[in-house]
Image (cartoon, rainbow, N blue to C red):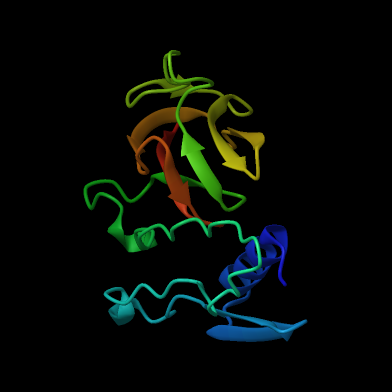
Amino acid sequence: MFKFEEICELIQLVGSSGVSSIEVEHAGSRVRIEGRAQAPAASAAAPAAAASTPQPSQETAPVPPVAPPAPEPGAAPAEDENLHSINSPIVGTFYRAPNPDADPYVKVGDFVESGQTLCIVEAMKLMNEIESDVRGTVVRVLPENAQPVEYGENLFLVRPA
């Protein structure tokens, strides 16, 4: 049987490698993971990770839902081509604030410094602070709070200073 961490690692590998799909069989369990189509015209199809039917006696962890496709780099606001995209370095859940009662780390219109915390991406109960890699003004926050995000998905658009 596959562990949840192994399935997450396979999802990350397929997403970052550009491989269209992979199917692995181990100890009587089988999992198939399909990556996104790389062609720009194929944005209508959003393949998801699919595991074979688990045996009732096995305890399985739920697989997180796959987020909708990230906007193409050309999908940034057409009026400004100089926007810098800050992307998710991992697969996880996007949070704008350190806790549900706190204000967000940043809002649209805020000026951010390089190294400033912008959000948290939670992966397997680990809270990973995502920092800005550029100085500038936040133009857009792309994912909704508590939304699943994928490796490389655009999180913020920043107009560099």
